[in-house]
Length: 155
Image (cartoon, rainbow, N blue to C red; front, top):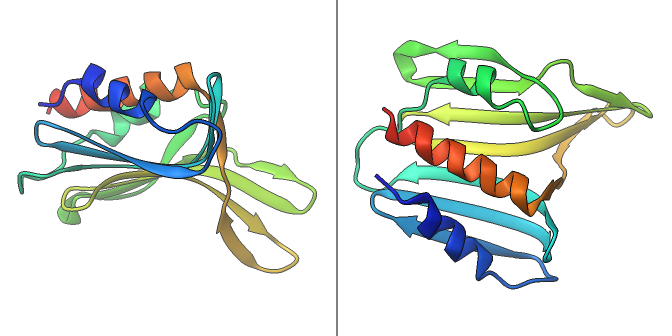
């Protein structure tokens, strides 16, 4: 399985002070990080995606994510689990409610498509859902990547 240090090293070589996408591949794991901003201390993450490139199913236990990914600032809870189809959705619970908008993390796991992590905002007045960047320190993003790579390698 992938070496997380190699993936983080590829991420650290990314351009600072600008938007962009970093694609890191190691072994049979591909990690795509879409950034709204990136500097020496932190980042604004648009989306994080992981998938296996060897055709094998992407296996990650949603219960483990729910229990162990406690450093995002909002607890995650499994809201949908379709074992037969190999899909799970986790969201912040409770979601953050502020000025007529609801915002929450969403983690989608799928055996064929991999993992995606985004932050979604729902504006009640417009009735529209959109993505919004996640502010992370670089340490938090690196911890998140390390945990996910480790958990995938355990399966």
